[in-house]
Length: 107
Image (cartoon, rainbow, N blue to C red; front, side):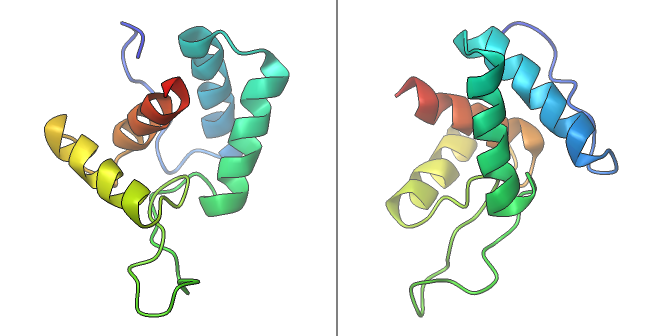
C-alpha cells in the first residue's frame, strides 16, 4: 500500500463514499484508470457490498464458504487468513481486506 494513512470511511458511511475511497486508492496504489478501479469496486459491491461478511449459503455444501470483500473461498480464503495473521490484521477489518486485495492484484 501507499504510505498514506489508511483512512477509509467506516462501515456507517455509504457504499458510494467507501467505494469512492477504494477507487482513488486503487488508482494511486496500482496506477489503474478510473474505469478499471470502478470495475473492481463494482465487483466487490456485488460480492459482499464491500463488507467483511461470510457467504450466507456456501455453493460447496459443508464448506466454510467465501469470506470478505471478495468472498475469498477455499485455498484463497486460507491464504487470506494467513496473510492477515502475518500482518497482524483482523480479517474483518477494511484494512485487511484492502491490503489482501492489493496483494492478489499485484500477483
